[in-house]
Image (cartoon, rainbow, N blue to C red; front, side):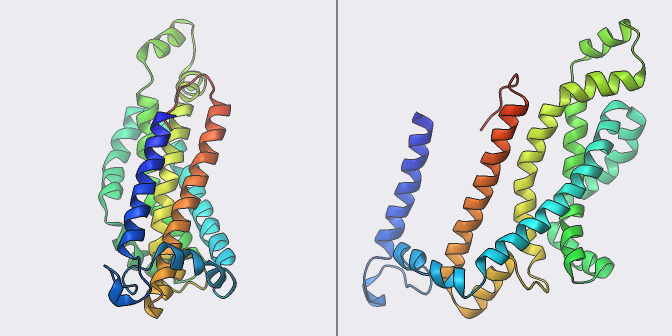
Amino acid sequence: MTRRLIGVGAMGFVVLIWWLATAGLASEDRLISPVILPSPAEVIGSFPSLLRERALVASVAATLKRVLIGFGLAALVGVPLGIAAGSWRVVEAAGAPLALFGRNLPVAALIPLTILWFGIDETQKVMFIFIATVPFVYSDAAAAIASVPDRYVETAQTLGASSLQIVSKVLVALAIPDIYNSLRHLFGLAFGYIMLAELINAQHGLGYLLMTSQRRGLSEHIILILIIIGLLAYGIDRLLFWFQRGLFPYRAVEE
């Protein structure tokens, strides 16, 4: 409770500084011009126009759809490959260079590559998320398998378990909470990456709204969209955390 109160207090302090810096009716009365930083009241007051005139709900739905599909594909591919890499050294040795390359590749560099491969429609945006996140999913899944203590594997071998039984009934069973926790954190990474993909030929999406707001000089909409993105990401993380506590009550997890 103390930790949460300190967090709320810090957020309140930031809002207070924001309000003080933008207090005043006229531009010359403010420390910061409203063109650069609108006041909290102006940002909140712009919500009805963002909701009704600029299709906010459709943009939120489009962004979530792209992230869910792209990151879902990354999990479907990356988790099994990571389990195989953590279980067998041959697979890990083969995949390590590719995973290292993928994790260190600048994300912005994937934009022209995915446009070349998949065009500029929805497939490009989904595959951008997939290519950008699958190396991290793979590496984290492999690390979760590799972190299982050897004593469990040795006990299973003593009891006569086969290699496949050791992987499925020991390694995966013990590593699945860590894999889920990793996916929960990486989903936030994917949610941030989609902003880049939506700058290209998007009709809806939060990234598209940010770009058009910048072009029109709607600074209050820019800040409001950023707040909405933060609230969405926080809400999704809390939902995944709630599922995590229900699925793995025997494992203590960090919030």
